[in-house]
Image (cartoon, rainbow, N blue to C red; front, side):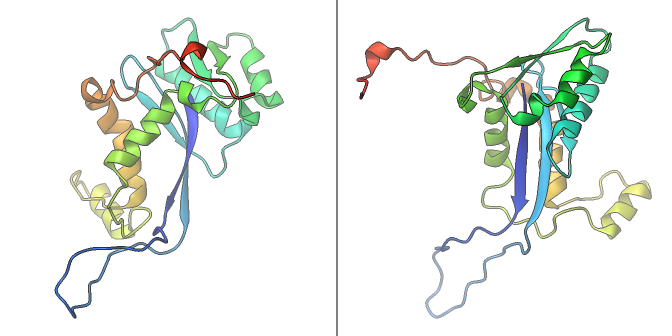
Length: 202
């Protein structure tokens, strides 16, 4: 299953309510700015293995980058079936030309239009929001220079508390590692809706 996610590290402009001592000012942490993280990703529903591509813009080029990365993940597979929505970039001429090249091992399957509930990766985005973004303020969007220096200096446990690292670490590392726990929340088992159970309004 493949789909993009558009994530913004931004304070939500809604009233905040909490309990506190009378006449005592309460400070609520929040981020500033409106920095955006575009992710074009895919998830293997059998293993939870995910491939996430950061892209300045989600388009035909980012789609081809993702498809190349997926092929590289499965060098021994003769054919890789990928289920996608009907976004324009999935139908782009560049993408179709890439898929038509000799030796291409990826076959796209398009889910029905306007049916995001049929795209299991949408559940992955929901899972990510449930575990990473709610009630949490990330002071920075990306790792700061000091943190990057600590990591490159040989400290693999240098703490990254930025928005971007939190999102990508969850998707790339935690989801596959805890797939036995998360797999029931990111499932391709769908409830069958029968017209007999609903009154159709003409």
